[in-house]
Length: 180
Image (tube, rainbow, N blue to C red; front, side, top):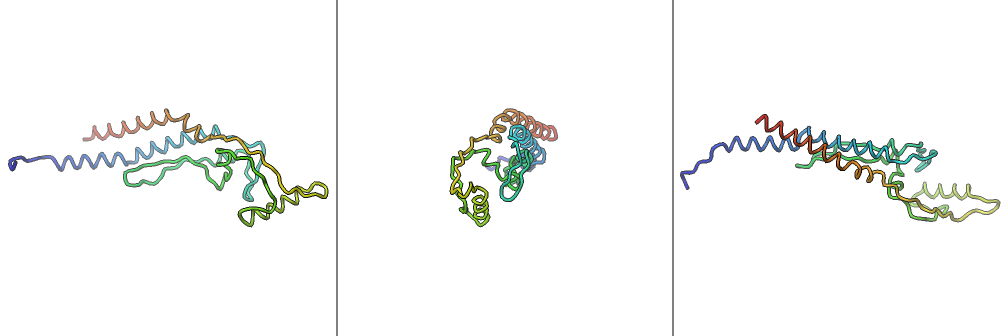
């Protein structure tokens, strides 16, 4: 066994480093971001537009605010893991999850809430809901059906994203093979 000598280990180690650098490189991160942007565009097309301006958390949300809140961004690299996201900005569309997942039927009771703003809003509701000399003590909201526009966009773009990523990954590794 003493007579066996392996040559080219330094060259092999260099090649492996280049493969790892390509797998974590700019080209693949750009491909992931492009895929996230395609999903965002599809979700923007599918997101509903309210027929009127709404208010939530003391903010007025114009019709189409949900569409404006959809964003795509590259995530952080973590070890050997690349990522990109499509998401809604909560400060622009705090109601996005309610539209996407729907709401159950529930009672709205004046003066109750998780925080001071909700209790103040409940008192304002009690003032606004006066009928003659009576004050309504409850209003029942019938709930809303879910409109999973983001999940539907992911499902609709699944094949296109897969094809895009396969092509870009293949191109990146082919370029690495030609350079070797």
